Structures are given as structure tokens and as C-alpha cells.
Length: 103
Image 1: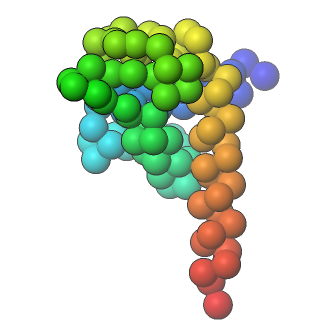
Image 2: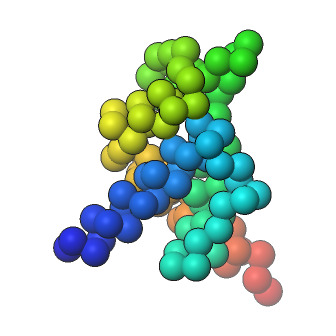
Image 3: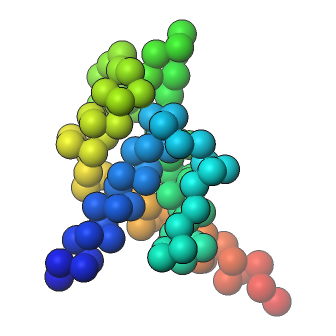
């Protein structure tokens, strides 16, 4: 159980780093996670990046404005479970789409 919790925490942190702009999606890579999960993390991170007039706004709860670090902390502290659910749903979507595309 502890290992699963560690992976979930890492996934949430990766998504929050991409969403806040601390790490660009192109620079993010993980040798531990599968390619599907890495792609899902990138997609969710980009979906959660809502910048208005140079300030970050949370699209989940519409709070803000945040600095990069503030938005990262906001996502990991308040929306931890939502981040995990979004990545799981996106990974399922990617797998389903790849199965349909295969002949």
C-alpha cells in the first residue's frame, strides 16, 4: 500500500509541476512510469494550466491568482485526489483510443 501511495503522490506532483509551469511538458519524463501514464500526466497538466493576464487561475475551483509556486502548492494540497482521478481517466482514454486505432 505504501508503494501505491508513493506513486500517486509522485503523479500528483508531476501534474502540478507541469500545470504551474515549473516544468515544461516537453522536459518531463519518467523512467519509472509507463509511457501511457507519462502522456496522461502531460495532458492533464496542460489542461490545468489556466493563465490570465500572466496570472495562474485554478480551473477546478476558480481560485487565484497564484504564482507558479503558489499554484503548485494549491494543486497538491487542495486537489490531490482530483489530480489522481484526472490522470486515471486520461490514461484510460489514451488506452481505449489506442485499442480502437489498432487494426
